[in-house]
Length: 436
Image 1 (cartoon, rainbow, N blue to C red):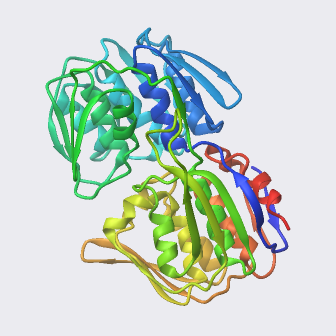
Image 2: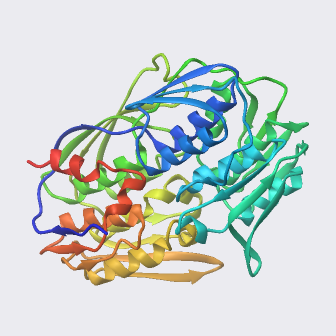
């Protein structure tokens, strides 16, 4: 437990560069390990989640060497049966994507998770992998399945699968399993989710095609590394800093070399719709960075107005919704976030954690169910007050409440910020660097 006390507001100013995007880093490691040559990954993020994937691959026999923020992955050796159960910590991306990889192996692996991930549902990924031929057993509570999981690899067959829930992790697990399946694998999405896996597979030479909401993988080509992969700055981490700059008058920051993947830019699109001053300066593609767009974000404070976030927009800002709720508290009028129910199934119930905290700060926020959707309604007051806050053990809740506390009137106490190391261990240091 690590307590944080926030006493004074400050006006953020300056230029910053962020660690690599963790969603991209997971995929670079995993797909690099499945290729037939060496991959050099630059600007690799050093935090709990990315290290969980690195240690998992190491346990599966992949040769990996890390030197600060650069990682070398030798993918030619293949995978081997681990000597003991593999611990994936609390990284849901690690667990779900590795399940897809292990589905096509010829050995058995037990995957165990940390406290928070052990409470997250897994049947959404187990079901399609079983349809492909994987044998997966899990801890059951009622109709749902949870870690620990035991996967026994087998001969897989390609399937056509319509995702019942918008999930890039489930989509990715199916596609990764499809690499070792007999025949084509096709995933159909109701709502398009982040496409990092599709981009990374294509970069490594996979025969993959995307036609609107349909992704088809033909496992007829060996994966071959492009040699160098540069990971752009983490867009989710950038969102916390951008919201802080937007809601504190007089702020102006530049976030350099951040990911501009269209399937992840929902937070910035919605903030601009609210009236936020955000300018995007794209970079030209360079060696090792020809698969994901990136550029600089210039963010300054502005007067915000209410917006409606539609269900189709949710996948593009699902991880940033907690800090967006903070922004909505400072906007004029009623903001409605439609179809936010998936937030219930993250590291913690993020609807509960954010509503509880923001109410304690004086916000007018509530969750309502309507037409089969769970919606969040926020009547912006333009002001929050300092309060005793809880992280609920969730990194995004914790960082969102730090942002809220910095913009609030009066002091706040946040019970535990140790969970921030899951995705952004340098968060507080970065904030201090913006102190005017």
